[in-house]
Length: 150
Image (cartoon, rainbow, N blue to C red):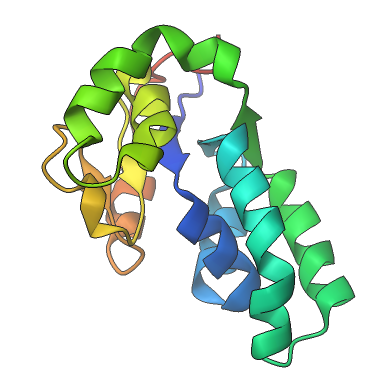
């Protein structure tokens, strides 16, 4: 039986996948071995902010958005109705840092899986967090699925 890791991806990782090389490489390298999830809200947030970020960095908007669409095929968007029952607990865990990040926490809670982020607001919320410089340690470890794909 093949097992996979589950990992919740924050919006800043979605943006970094478009702007840089390392995140994009990791997503592609572990696609099929790791199940990546992110609240649909993170996709909306990234899609909203990316054109301005791309323009500031003088990166072609159509090319950047094409990369974003490719990433959307690797990271599964999770609709709010799937994790809404965890909203209260998620808000309680993140409210003092950044209450807008509750969907990421709510997706990670029932699955018991970590969050890939560069946002310090998640640290201390009771869920393991991985930053890009160390996430491959987690990605290459064998594990049993947490159940997000069920």
